[in-house]
Length: 308
Image (cartoon, rainbow, N blue to C red; front, side, top):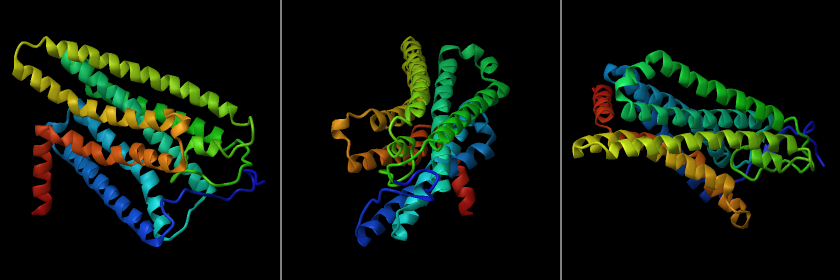
C-alpha cells in the first residue's frame, strides 16, 4: 500500500464519466463561478469607491466578499479544469494548498459572520454607543482577529492532516481536497490526533453559533419593542440579509458534516459539498443587494460608470 511519503498526487471524485456530462459540469460551474466573481467583485468595488458606504457594516461586507471570492476560487477552477481535460488528478502540494486555503477562508468567513452579528446587535440594541463600540480601529481589529484566527486554525489542521501516514490509496471521494476525505486514507488510529483538533474546532464553532443565536434573540426582542411599524421594518431590513447568509452558510455546512451515515454516499456527499462550498459565495452578493437600497444605488452608479 502506498504511504504519504511516496504519494505525489491524489485522484478527485469526477462529476461524470461521459464527455457530454463533463462539458455540462464545466459549463455550469463556469456560469456559477463567473456570477460569483461578478457579484462579489461589484460589491468590493462599490464599497471601496463609494464614501457613503464607508461604515462598519459595509467594511465587514467587503471582507465577506473577499473571502467568498477566495473560497470559490480555491475549489471550482481545479474541478472545471479536470472536467475540461478529462482528468481527476491533483498534485500532493496542490491538495495540501487546497485544504489550507479552503479551511482558512471558510473559517474566516464564519468568524466574520459572528463579528457581523455583533455589529447588528450594537446597531439595534445599543445605537447610542455604536460610534464608540464600532469605531474604525475596533472594526479593523475584529476583522484582523477573524482572519488571523482562521489562518492559525487552517495551518494547524493542514500540517496535522498531511503529517499523518496515508496507506489507503490516493482516491479522494470529493471534487476537492478536504480534511475528512484525506483522513479516510490514513492508517488505522493514526488520525486520532487530527480528530481531537477537529473536536476543538467544532466546540469553537459551536460557541460562535451560540453567540450569533443570542445576539439575534436580543435583536428581535429590541425590534419588537420599537413602537413604529416603519422603525421595525427598517431594523428588520438591516438584519435579514445577514441572517439569510448565516442561515445558508450554517445549514449547508452542518448538513455536510453532521448528516446521518445512513444517507451518506459519494453522490450525496458531492451534491452537499456543492451546496456548502459553491452556492453561498455565488448567492451572498444577491442576498445582500436585494433589500439594501444604499448598496443597490452604489452598484447602479458603478455599473453606469462601467458602461460609459
